[in-house]
Image (cartoon, rainbow, N blue to C red; front, top):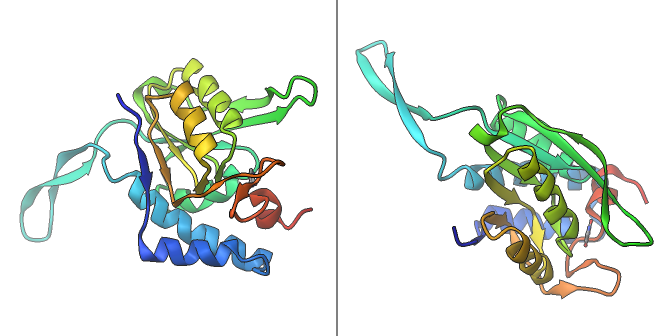
Length: 210
Ligand code: URA
């Protein structure tokens, strides 16, 4: 499968994203906007889910009603900022199974090191959506997807809020089979690894830390 990048250019997404980018947006507003934008991104990322039908009875008659086919989706959050996207998505897909991947960067090797990993069973039979708001260098996202694939996942979509071209290129090289859905492809990474224009540190902005 060739990789594809979907940019969700819906006016509501773009408007909310602009509000999130503003440096004076409060933690409370940032969190609320992230929740709202997560719903819209969840709508887009699930657009091509396979449907089947089941027989139901309406008050008037029987019908073959469309329902999502297959096992419950798996949502995998890359800690900690992934949880901001996860919470909103779960409001739209409340029956999804949920996993977490925790990685930190080894300061000597600069490679991502796993400190937490817990994912749902039977990943091989589930559509798996890996979420992290910021696709920056792509190193941690690519490493997280390595782990999720090792756990069995075969049908993976990566969902983020912002992507840098460097991160998209890294993902394309490491996981060409994983489509990326994002609200914006920004300009570049700065020398500190921040996405420009970006929105700063997503975790700090959503949790009010510094
Ligand atoms: N992670 C963030 O939170 N922000 C960036 O700009 C890059 C990585």
